[in-house]
Image (tube, rainbow, N blue to C red; front, side, top):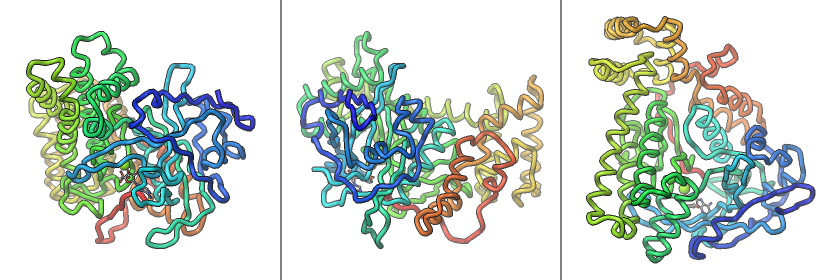
Length: 488
Ligand code: AMP
Ligand code: MG
């Protein structure tokens, strides 16, 4: 238990029990004049970190990296990763793990400062982050959580009072990131590349203890761990795809083994439906396009399988065959969960022959008529077809008629069907143009009101309330593709 100026902090440091090549001890670099920007009270409460609250000087100094409690041994984690297909040594270049918060309920979460200064893994970078991208990560990660997607969370953003040089001088900021762990596919790749088989086993045992304790009694625990990771990733990618979320930089270092979404750099939500859509400015070949996410996840998991091979060979006479069999299950898990999710979006409670075709035909029409993804499902949910012009076309009307026949054939009442659809079709998502408006006001004018208002509606995305109405509006037609950049 560390005691810091009245804040009682009880960070644990279980990661320090791993081989010391897995991390470097490093302290955050103090900043000039920290200021609060946003603090997540409800998450603080959940984590039993209530006394860090907004307004407290001690909390601010802690989350700016200016003072860390006695006994708190902060580290930067080592990892490697395939970035756009190329293997590289990476590590936390600008993130510093303060420690793990343990709660009375038995939870354990990493508390990490992103943008807290240089580490031995900074590779020429400045170790800093800027306000816009940190607010963007806060907003989208919290929106994803509210949408029901496993994700790392955001506890706070503070400004550092320092200027950070990018293409132009920008206000510096630090995000406090909370994750069930930061163990990545790339963490295993790092150990496979630079460690011993014993190191690999220690990391795998640690991962099992932390994320899959229920498999400890099984015979082939490492194979089972791989299976669990594959299943979690399949379900995660289904959730992204059903919501129209494009991660944008699915490098193996940006894929957790816990199944949480991590690394909100160039991500975005689809407005106009286009299966091959790409937002990230650096993804020139569409490697991480919307319709590639499931394929890339399998590719990344194959890299994990390679990293685990020495452990699996001890368990199995035919390690490669066993790993491949698990990997093949990804597509099956994905397809089942995706079809089920799509049926729910269309108010269908059970599966019938013809459902997959009904879904496919809708998506084909949406592609042809450049439909807005979220708004189309919202319109179907509310039976309100004033928002998009293609709803008046015969093609839509014919599909709508088929859908109505199928929906009404069910035993549930129309009201029950509508409620079911409301649970699976968000009314609001972080619309790209709204996110940009909110971030511009914050960065250019220090006006945080648009950000806070947007955040507030995004915390109840399935609520269908009147106050959400303006956030439901479709983006203005600009004729220009939305572009995102790796978070800097
Ligand atoms: P990302 O694209 O966010 O996954 O980052 C890839 C790698 O670059 C990670 O190792 C980051 O820690 C590192 N990195 C990104 N920005 C900076 C920065 N400003 N200073 C140091 N390292 C950075
Ligand atoms: Mg990353």
